[in-house]
Length: 335
Image (cartoon, rainbow, N blue to C red; front, side, top):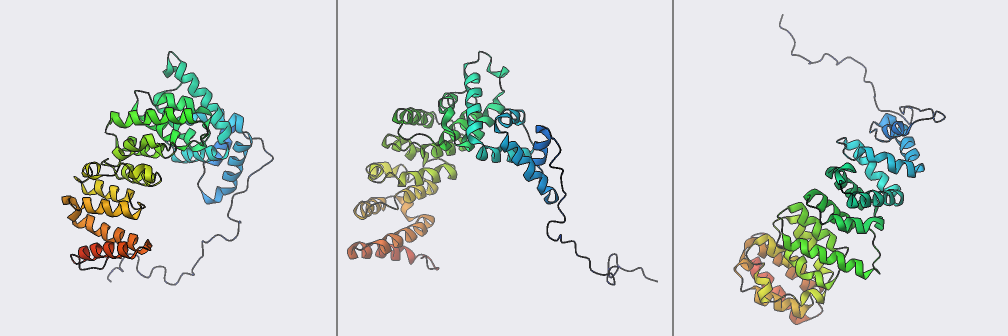
């Protein structure tokens, strides 16, 4: 007798069983009257199993309620490689950011003035504090973060720059804004080649908008990393005429050696006034990159958008004519 194929028809006559939990019956209850330690609350808070969701909610709530002790307690997890613990730390930063930020400020101040900083925290711990500091949004440690941008450790320097871009700073404090802007500009000129660092510099500039930063932000648009180029181009859009004054045939030619870089330049001028935009298109047409297939596809979209937004019939016609001329090279219609 031939053996049946493995697995075929063996369970055909068995009754179907549903394993879908109903209501909250599947959730494991906990004893909320019992006294737990901070460690136990943290273990509860980092669980990701749905059946222990009551434990997760309870543990996290208790950590939040005791924010002062929790802020000190979580310092032991600064080097964790457990992504669940990392998620709890980040969520706590959102919930008890004021308390955490104030403690971090004290700890970083101690680290910065210590003759033996490694006895306070190691470099990985400092970088993680900077990251969490940014997530809190608390500006209490802004001076300490600025000091850490001078660190020899690239990870600390990058994390400090990122945090400076996230803190909810007092925009009325012009002096601090100028100091950070000056330091960010110095770091752009140092050009250490790190893609992540360039991206974080571009991000930080968005929190310190000053016309004096424009030249350095334009430099970040030439980065070989998309993240830095995109952030820089979007930021420059917000500067309006202050930025457009920098756009001429000489400055634009610097962007014409690379498709991705020139694409960023086009993105940064999409809100340019019509007269300036038309002038930009006219002198850019002298660059070889202007006729690259990828650039032309983007230009068709950009020119059509500018034409659709305009009330000037002459401008609309000229932009549409250029777009239609490019469109003839492509079999598919670009909207």
